[in-house]
Image 1 (cartoon, rainbow, N blue to C red):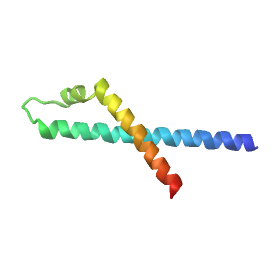
Image 2: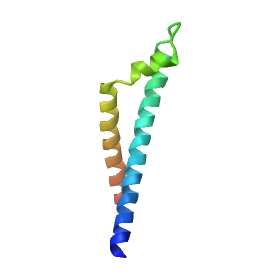
Image 3: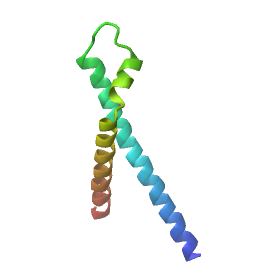
Image 4: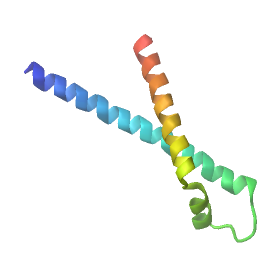
Length: 81
């Protein structure tokens, strides 16, 4: 029974980590998308153009690194307090 409980808690922790990291990445990309429309309001700027402009390899790398750092900070604070 203890092994089943350990596996369940590990899978729960993994699911929580994936959800929190995905949420941080979502916030990063939504912030980029809002910036695309507020900083450059050229005529003919479409949602498809903005999405193509923000979904790049560099932005994905920055989003993943910041999400992992953010998750680590929040997990540390969660365990400390």
